[in-house]
Amino acid sequence: MIYKQIKQNINKMEIDNVIQNIKEMLVERGENIDEFSEHEQDIDREEFYNDDKVIEFHTNNSTIIFALTKTLRVSIIDLLKKNKSNIDNFVNSYNGKYNIILIFNNDILTTPTIAQLNIIDKILQKKKGMLQFFQIKELQFNPMRHELVPPHRKLSSDEATEIMQTYLIKSKLQLPLILKNDVIAKWLGVKQGEIIEITRYENSSGKSYYYRCCI
Image 1 (cartoon, rainbow, N blue to C red):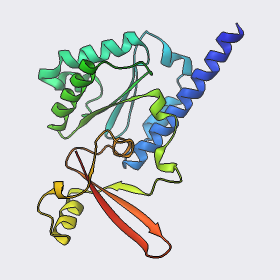
Image 2: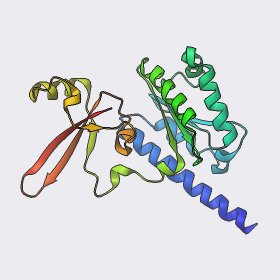
Image 3: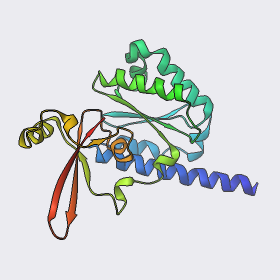
Image 4: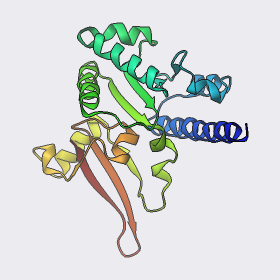
């Protein structure tokens, strides 16, 4: 009985951390989280670990799907694969948003599973969306708040073009690179080919800017 209570408390703390950090992440991306915030308060944290159904939240631009049990994870991935040739079917069944964030438990995902999710991500990107997946452990903290992490932000298309013109860059690949699964790139929702601006402060030279292209 005591062990069960301890486990429930740990689960609640984990989910509270995940919810808080996802909301901060989405705000960093410029999304409106009002509906998400209102909805999450009504859900008991133990429900996140039930096999009955996935739990989903929405912003103005994204759908966030929790599938924390193995049964639900397999089910949602199978549903994505089944609708791979017509991804609109899946999207429309989850509120019509082409930006989809999946939250899994900390079980190791197989290489074939990750490959399938990456394929679906590419399909969604053709529709101006994207698919991301996070494990609970990745969302226990906000990496942007770490004292050693300088400010990062994703540039708009116009800003990226201006930077390339200013520095006479013919190809984005001439810039230093950052992988799309880098912790910060993933946090900001950066797609391949997009550019991140990093702001550094030094006592001697003051503020300076650095740019990296996501691959």
